[in-house]
Amino acid sequence: MTENRPVMAQVIDLLHDPNFSALERRLNRINVFEIADVRDREIKHSNLLRWLMDPRENHGLGDRFVKEIISSVYTNAIDDSADSGVDLETFAGLILDDLSESVVEREEKDIDLLFHTEDKRFVLCIENKINASLSNHQLDKYRNYVEKKYGDYEQRIHVLLTRSGYKVPSDKATIPDEWLTLSYDDIHQDIENVLDGLDPESITARLLLQYNELLENLGIVENLELVKTIRDIHRRHVELFARMFGRPRVRRSPIPEEFQSLYNDHIKALSAVERLHYNTEAPIQDRIRDVILSELDAMRTEGLVKDCMKEGNSSYLWFQTERMDEWINLPDRDEAGSWGQADGNAYHYWIYPDDKHRLRRPTVQLEFGVRAQPDDVLERMDRIKDVANPEESRKPSRGRIFYRRLKTVKTGIDLSGINDPELIVGPIERNLRDRIRTAVMEMLDYEREWFKAIDAQNA
Image 1 (cartoon, rainbow, N blue to C red):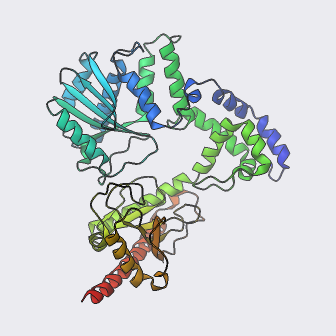
Image 2: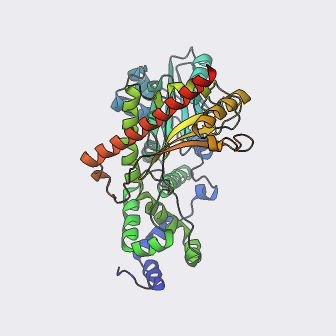
């Protein structure tokens, strides 16, 4: 459409767009899972999956759905080719067995889904993650419980179910390859497969169709036709959406007051367009993140840092060092620390995003997490603070404060003018790597100076 048209003319154009009308009709269809407010709540998805996996439930599927899951997990394991330690051929053979006398548990020792046969042939442990991240030691806790209670079962299979089916990061499990993968795309296809044999007018078929539609509408599973429609709407009315949603960024902006009524009246369709609007930044973020994580991992391999973030979709990337670990990190606590986990992390060195939560202009920062730390650790933090930032020494680092940022190193990176991730190659990628490495090395130089000063005080 022509740019700089009056706002009301742009709104009228949108409301008369047949694609926008079709999108509204689809998203406004009655869906029992929307009524039940399932959305992206893992507990409610796990409840539905438990019902579908239980052969003795009243859905009329018997063991068909759980066999579809077994088939998907097997296919993913073969494609991945990692050494999981699982006898995959025996595992796949379960598809031909009678699993009708099996049991599915919910939240047994906090495990999302635990399927097991009564004749001790097979137990399947599934951890379900839609949005939440894995906490440290969580998967090891589940695996150890299954190995102890079900150790006499012939097959013990551990599966991580996520939106994209990503592999367990090496820092989230002692033996990450033991965890096989499953995605919500797999779940969506498994449901399509069982629908083929159902009466389309049956209650079960209608429920499953609505559940798959919910996964598509929320973007948990990508429906290519739906995505194409939304992209076309966004492209044709890009000026209006720029006014309504602001400049694309990682976190959404408030809807301006002049568009609030329009947004509320068409909230489902406009929310779908809004998700796409903000996701235009995602491919750039993903590419920058991949390059930075790759460089951090290279520095870990070289022994320059002790550990670093391996993968994920956060804008906050971390690394840690041997000396700082020895100084302030702890064994597990009973109470969650500043980053929400009862683990030993009392600090992070961050590759920190800019004020729009993007990695286009990152800095390197040292941050202490002071929540739930014992007095001796807080005292050690204070000693670092005293030598790193003497002017800050009078400010409190305890009480209700969760974080204390001690040092920031600028990287000099500015990728704000790049909007195509495929451009972050060659000289641009090398410059990004070099500047990250230089800034990290500068931070490590500061760390050496701090401990040199502390060692002199202790002498």
